[in-house]
Figure (cartoon, rainbow, N blue to C red):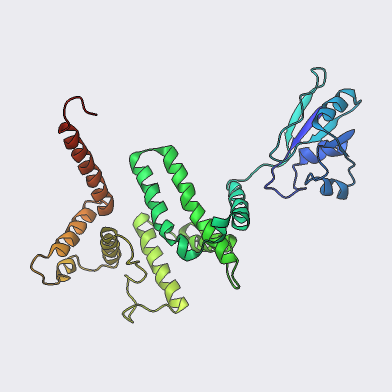
Length: 322
């Protein structure tokens, strides 16, 4: 019997399944294709002997052996050449990737690029800043067009920005790593979901949002973060660098959850003759009342307008021109 033992390069060597260790201990011969195979130190520590041979020799030795032969497949590499039909063979998965394991590949790839690519090596937080805006918008466009493959690709570009910035931060004294970033968001999610990770009981999604806001306010107070006005406000933390419609919608959502009267929207008028900004603010309120996102609605209208303009342009082309 030839047993091909496959392992994941993302799992620490030696962390094998019971079936894998059982096959290794019971094998007549254990074969590896390289002296650098990551499992070999673990085998030596366990007192299991091994031989380094080519994949072709592995098949030949399996055919000639009078007992079980285990071939240590290169993690992520190719299996040995198929043995003769007279030699029964099987594959054992000694270790498997957990969900998210491929993120380790991304971190390792980013480390390599930072060290060996001249362009990647010279990037800074500031030079990458435009991509923090561009990449999410490209992902949103792919989502809106319904192109699932493109959306998946663009999500990868968004993820790259997180890993890239964390890699740059890790290089400076007192910086942080991508693990610190992940640890921070995990801790935040656990802290802000006490109805999932603790004993808090909620009635519905609206109560979840209210609890979230209350926890955020408590966090800011604990960190000593003061409001811009000097008085704690439900609007603290709203980023004013976002697009205007999205900003107006977020301000209104925050205010509504705090019980702010809806008529204050009109009270915010600057008294100008045109009052166009105030009209837009009221349109945002109308969108919220209809449970619509004004930013997404305007984007959809812009796409429709684009299609109408293109159709008009086509209609004005001379016959036969294309």
